[in-house]
Image (cartoon, rainbow, N blue to C red):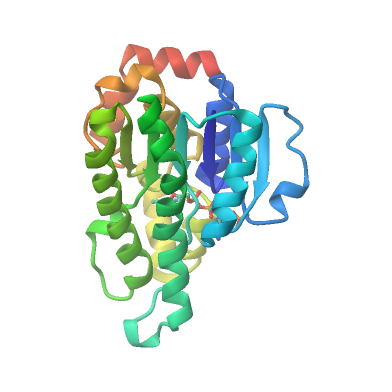
Length: 254
Ligand SMILES: NC(=O)c1ccc[n+]([C@@H]2O[C@H](COP(=O)([O-])OP(=O)(O)OC[C@H]3O[C@@H](n4cnc5c(N)ncnc54)[C@H](OP(=O)(O)O)[C@@H]3O)[C@@H](O)[C@H]2O)c1
């Protein structure tokens, strides 16, 4: 059983498909009205919840888990890029919303699933972080600050549950062609960055990081013991992709 937040589009939606193809029952979460339309697949439960609200996350996951049984895999893919502006031009509400979606949501979902995973001595958590966490550039307070804290939170979670047999990863996807990625790259320097990523082959489609996340969630990846997974680095991507168990898994899910 897998829970994927941000399951309505982008990397999250592709991860829902990849995990489903690998045989998981998937609880996909995004804001209402996402849960109102059935997925058309009995193995994919759509749940409408705003992950910035603790009570919504607790109740939505609790209700879904009653139907599916305990969670083996948690992927926190919900995220917002927010606006790029100096600190003094950011509204308080804008900064709060970034911290809520990009950081607190993962705290809420882990608060629900980690104790059960630790009790059962099994489980994998993948929190999607960002290279922005390591690039403190002007105008990027909203996104980078939250992602930097998410990476820290993920490392703390790993320190708390690794001995219990639960694997926790902070996954750096690299540049992925999604709504979030395009939103800040419609003109100027952003658009030039997008075009350069297309030219160099660095701009991935969501299925690519999703395949890696499904691999990390599998038993084949028990030897991946680093908490921070730099999929964004081409050399790392190539090394993971060249593993026979990675290729087998991806081929069999096609
Ligand atoms: N794309 C990239 O290049 C890139 C690079 C580094 C890191 N990332 C990270 O990868 C993750 C996925 O991003 P993406 O590029 O796939 O973005 P995306 O296509 O914009 O998808 C974002 C997802 O988050 C959901 N979401 C946003 N706010 C929510 C809320 N309050 N409650 C519930 N769900 C919410 C959205 O669903 P609804 O709007 O339907 O609620 C959507 O499913 C994010 O954490 C992002 O920061 C992406």
